[in-house]
Structures are given as structure tokens and as C-alpha cells.
Image 1 (tube, helix red, strand yellow):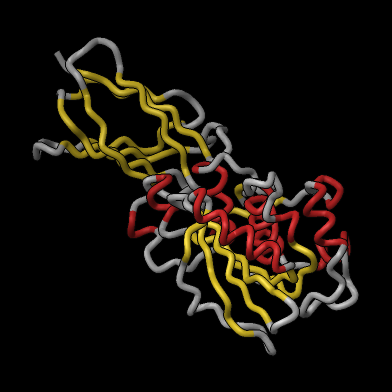
Image 2 (spheres, one colour):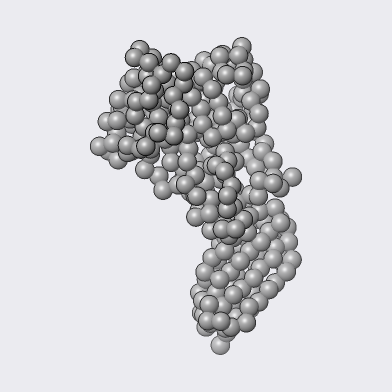
Length: 286
């Protein structure tokens, strides 16, 4: 008796893949491979008459990154059920951002308190949010979402300690903070919320010296806080590290992401899928 597979294909947000998909099945025992081209990804896919064994399944939708996983096919009249989730191919998708009024209160407050951001002087609140290019806006929203969830033992979030943005980049931002944030972060090492991390690659702002750096304990999508001080004031360089997480979380074929730099839109996908953390914007096919 042969076996069968039933596939359900979803994008990052749980919507079915509404486009034709190419499927390739490679038996690990060296038998004949099977290619199925142009299958309708918007419906459940049933693949029949498969000899029992372990296969490497590759799926390649046009708008998403190809993914691969190993599946075991059993001799049974009942199909093996497989659900696959696909990361957006950033060359074939665009972001859609919410209105400023839809942001979390803490994010609105931080934007509103920041009228001297490098390159955006005189803009604050909604004006600053709209003025940022897509990459910076996405990066800021990722970090604000992550810092808004990361909570210390005193029940305050990291976001609640952020006072004023100094500079926003696609992969990080520099923000004025109080020394209290540094102390709470250091104390949280005992609770395994953060752990000490190398900070040597983080350049201090002018007039500041490097202090300490800490990284959250997440497998992928780590929050890193790197502190600087001039003796009186404190600044933090805050970023989220993907740590090759896109390939692991979505089982993306390695050659499709090799050499890609950290990108806030991929960080968004890691946070949403791996941590169930919504940064607040969406990716959509072009």
C-alpha cells in the first residue's frame, strides 16, 4: 500500500498562498523524485501514490521564499497532514503601514517626545512617523513592539524607559534613557531575561563612552541593549538580531537567503512567526 500527503500552504499571516506553487519530492532512499508544477496554493493539496519513506519536500511559490522540510510518508489510506508557512520574498513584496493613531500608546509617546532625530530635526509625533522612510519606520516599529513586550520584574517594560529618539536606522535606533534602565537590565540577568553580550561592534555617539551591553534570551529575534554614558547622561543603542532566524523559523532554502544583511522586514517576519509578536505593519505582494 502506498501513502499520501495533504498540504496546507500559508503565508506569514495565516492566509492561504493564492498563487501556483511548484512542489518537488526527493526520497532519501535514492528513489525517483517527483515534480508537481503549478499547483493551486489557495486550496488543500493532496499528493497520492507515494511509496512509504522519508522525503525532502521543497515548495516554491513565486512571491515567497522557497522552503524545504523532511516528511515521513506512511503506508496508509489516511494522508499525512502537513502545514507550511512561507516568508515573503522582499524583492516581490511591499510594506503597508498603519496610521499613527493605530500605534501602541508607548510608541506614540516616544515618537511625540522626539523632535531632534538625526536627519529629521523639527519633526515629532505623527510628522516624524510619516517622514521616516519605509526601512527606518519598519525598524522602529519592530523595536518598539519588542521593547513594549519585554517586561522587567518591576512590571515596567523596556519601552517605558525610553525617553527620546536621537537617531533611527533600519536595524537599530539610538535613544536617550535613564541610568535606571541600565540597572534594571543588569539586574534582570538573574532572572535570565537578559544576559551580558559583547558590545564592541557598537560605536558610541560623540561625547559618550561604551558601558555595557545585554541581549535577551530569545532563540531568534534577540533584543540587544548597548549602553553609553558621558558621566551624566545615558544613551542606548537598541537593535534586534535575526541570528539567521529566517532560515530556521521558516525552513527557507539556504541559497535563497545566503549573504542577505539584517533587514527590518525579515525581523518583522521572525517576530510574527517565532514570537507571535506583531510589529503593527503588514507585507503584501507587489
